Image 1 (cartoon, one colour):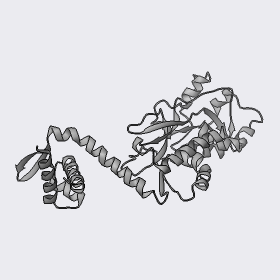
Image 2 (spheres, helix red, strand yellow; image 1 turned 90 degrees about the vertical axis):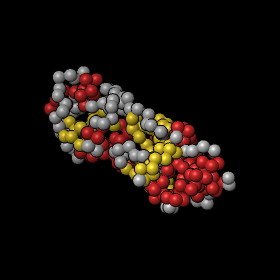
Image 3 (tube, rainbow, N blue to C red; image 1 turned 45 degrees about the vertical axis):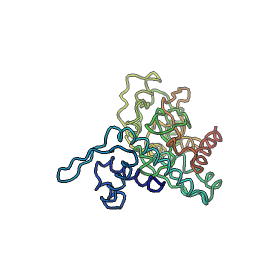
Image 4 (cartoon, rainbow, N blue to C red; image 1 turned 60 degrees about the vertical axis):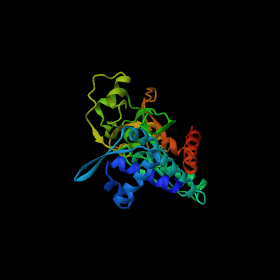
Length: 305
């Protein structure tokens, strides 16, 4: 069997097994059902055994044999690698487009203020940002690389720790000046606390209640105050003097450095059990554009330490 027919037959088999239908496979491959059936028959003749149980009930219903089911994951992985190989060939003459997924808040508070340095190093590489609070399917949505916040384990993704994070309270200089003195733990009982609802889905993320317990305050109900479902907006609310936010150090770094926000009670250290990770599909690890952005992210973190 020649290579083109071999590849076409495998493609027809993979699509037919996935859909359990020649017709649906034909629609996906943009050919006729008869052509799909003939390609599968060619492959069966080559192998010397059937790949499907054919049940003729008005419409032919396909059920993959046990041998077909066993081979299917390897064949699908092979097509995926072929796709990556073609992607690398496409990059031979140009650097192309890099698609990065991050949360909206991480993009606004950390990545975008620094991205110009990456673009100056790679001027021919176009960066497309996909900002979402929900995990995305890297393969289905053509995502090259991302930054995720969590415990470091995501199905099907390689994860490299990028940054650890502290949690601490912050407020605006104007909010602090209303007292004409340093704010104390006891003052938190009488101030508006700003809560970050976007972190509720992250198991293990420290809340105001946990931070207060760490500080020794266990008799304060921390649920009162302002609740916002975006980490960048939480900090903006604090900058505008609406209350005291429980800040994430990575998000708040630039605002604290510029004195738009003041870190309160620095004697209380609370390290988050979660961290930021660079994530990508292991099969894509050697893509030049991915390597460039991954290495830049790691260097950028070391740059600001």
